[in-house]
Length: 454
Image (cartoon, rainbow, N blue to C red):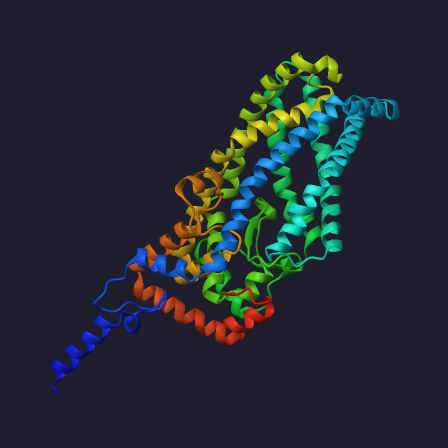
C-alpha cells in the first residue's frame, strides 16, 4: 500500500472513530484541528458529572437558602430581644454594675453576643458541622469544631466589644453627624482588623509555618519576585484539621501582608495547580486589591450608616417607647441597629458579590499570565467545584457568586492557552518534573485526602 493510501486509511479511521483521535483536556491539539477554548472548557466540565456534580450543585444551591434563613432568623431573634424587654434589662444591668459609659456599652455587648449566640447555636451546629459532614467537606470532630467556635466567640467578644464601644461613643458625642463619623470609625476598625488578623487572629485557629520544600517554595518566590513582590517566605497552614477544601489567600497589608496556602492545596494539587493558585494570590498583592477593598467597603459602610440613621429613626418612632430605647446612643437599641444593617447588607449582596467577583477575575487573569499554567488553573477550578456549583446560570452567578464560576474561570484559562500553546506545554512539562522531584502523584494525593482528589 502506498504512502498516500496509508494516510487516507488513517484519516478514515480517525473520522469513523472519534474516540481514537480524542485527546484529554490539556493535551496538545493536532495540527489539523485548531485549539477550541470552548470545547476544551466543556471537556473539563464533563469530567465532573453524575453524583459528584449533583452533590456539588446541591451543596452550593443550599447556600442560597441558608442566606435567607440566616437573615430571617437574625431578624426574629433581634425582634424577640427587643419585644421581650431583654435588651432594656441588659442595658439596665450594665448600668447598675459599672458607672463608666464605655464600660456599660462593652458589658451590654457581651450580654447581647452571648444571648444571640445561644439562640442561634442550633442552626449554627447544623450549618457549620452537620451539613459540612453530610457533604464530605469537614474533617473535624464535634469537640474540635466547638473549640473553634468558642475561640471565635471570644474574639468577637473582645474585638466586637471594642468596635461597638467606640461606635457608641461617637454617636453619643456627635448626635447630629454620627452617621459620617460612625462610618469613619467603622473604616478605621476595618483597617485595624485587616492589619492584625494575619498575626494575631488567624494563628488562633491554625498553625502557620514557613513552606520548607524548596521544590515548591522556589517557583512561588520566583513568581513573586518576577512581579515585583518582595516576598521572603510563603506560609502553610494546617487547614486539613478542619476541612478538605483547597485554598490559599493573601491577608493583611503593609507590614503584615502575607501569602499563605493551606496544606490541602500542597498535598492534593500538582505543581501546575499550585503555581496557578499562588500566582492568583500574588496578583491580589500587585493589583492592590487589599487597598481597593478597604476603599470600596469604606464607601459601602458610609452608605450603610446613612441607611441606618433613617431606618433607626423610623423604628424608634414606631416602637422605641415600648422597647425602652431612648435614642441612637442607647445600647438597648443595638438589636434595632442590627436589624436595619442586616436589611441593608442583604439588599446589597449582589453589589458586594460583583465587586468581589471582579477583583477575583482580575487576579485570575493576572495569575494565568504570570504562571502560564492554564491546565493547572482548570484542574484546580474543578477541585473548587467540590463545594461551588461549576456551571450556574448567569442570574445565579450575578446574585450569589463572590468568585467567577468554574465555567468562567476555566474558559478564561483555555482562551489564554489558545494564544500560548507552546508556552503552556513547556510550563506544564516543567511543573511535571517538579512533581516527580517532590514525589507527587494524583494517586498519592487521593490517599492523603480520603479519595477526594480528582
